[in-house]
Length: 328
Image (cartoon, rainbow, N blue to C red; front, side, top):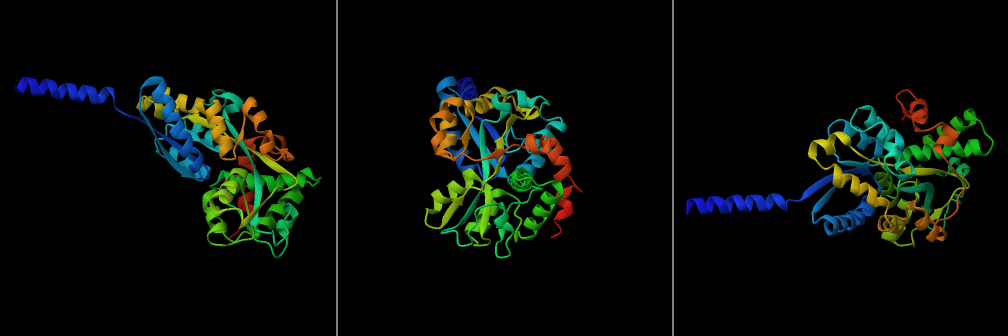
């Protein structure tokens, strides 16, 4: 009888190990919560249908740069899904991600894109139509902190680039962003915090954030309270992804983690991105939905700033231009 119990017990243990759930952690930026909630459900179903394995995807969200720092300091994320290359590069510099991470997936490992736009209060009472309007005395802008938020960095670079694209030089661009950030009453650590400040706390006249975030706000709160304004020129926001090599090898989750990122490029993954107002990168899906996204005069970080590594060093590193101009 005792032997039978032991054998049964062993069988139960074996059975539970065979059918044990696999779990992975996705460390992502602040305004992707809703997208990954839907995407994770779709991937889990796909993975179970394909392999028979149950996978649970846990999420961690925050400002992109803050998330990168957390991974470096020990957050055991299997994958990172950020909004700028420099935040993955800094993890690669720590040795936790391959230096060749941009070559692992299509489009330099960026499955989706976005751009920076304005969200104003209904009727646009301050008549905010372009970047120069943000400097008027009666306009207060809500922007997340460029030191902790990729969203904030894109806004900073979009504002700087708007001056360059209209014929200005770096001196005029620096003057512009200096005046702009002096008019930011609250500098939240991430994009979602900035949205809360603008929408729920009623602070500021314009929220400057990613295109997908403004449409989420309008969807959640209805169209009666806010309007979307596209400036005459803006920046291309790429959303890069990578496995965290040190973590997936330690946890033996590389296969499912790589499949998780690859599935972002599938038709289903791209369609879910479109549903959440992220611009797809797979041509067939992008062509199918091209009329759903406003055509904008867009520049890239590479074009005007020499890439993210240079932008980080010049503008956002300790003692960089942002530290020089922001004194609050």
